[in-house]
Length: 319
Image 1 (cartoon, rainbow, N blue to C red):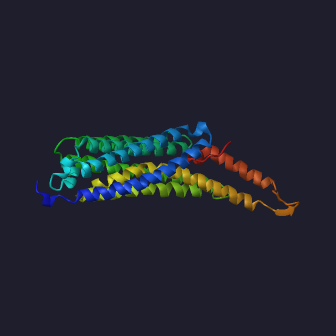
Image 2: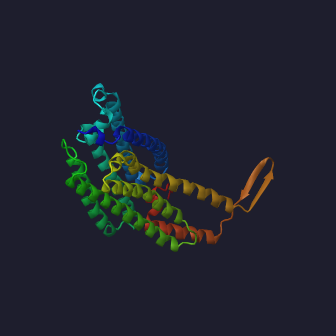
Image 3: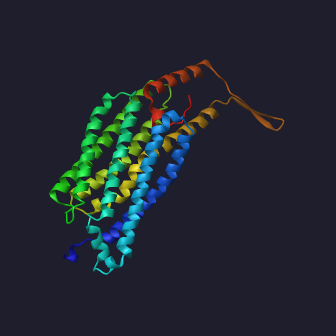
């Protein structure tokens, strides 16, 4: 092997795993907040979200643990260090069991995130299975493609830029972007439709949250696709931090919507106060209950029953 042709993979993966560690730390905070949100809500609604987010966090934990093992082997194994540029050559062998395990964890993390996104689509569109047909079909093809690419990489001596690996890998990333973008836009569109029939823009926050959170993972996947298609090893190196984003996106949606709901409640309470008067060392509040307020609340409940949007996206509203 001509070592002059080997890129500085050791440093590249060191930086990538450092970024992955930062994202995993953010995931730990988001997961704790998400569990608090789901535990304080309706259990019958949030059971699936609880299971799916826990599974995603478990896979992100497994991925970062495998990354740590790789670092210990690449920079701490005497046999590797005794080899000229051993810390760089180590990362070339994608047939390494640890490397293969990381690829599989990444594949199933992305798959779980996509399935959760499709489930949200199903709930937001009034539990209509018809809108989920195309996303499910594309997702099946997507998981087959990325698992095939990951399986090919387990073969000793395989070239990551070989024709077969590239064909399956690039197809998988393209389908992932298609599923993520399409389903995210469909959810946002439904929320926009529901919001048009309400006197207040109560669903705009949910719509923008879904779009922004979905754009994070879709944008990162597009970057990996472009780098890999251009023949850059950075596309393969970047999988480490991107694997954490598969968990970040769904957790972020749940937490952000709950925070927005809390802020909205406080704002509504402040706007409804007519007078504040102090007497005997205490503050009293007079809150009016008008017929118009009752009507708006009733209309809001009807829309909530129709779309199931806020509940399915992580709202903790008790009915």
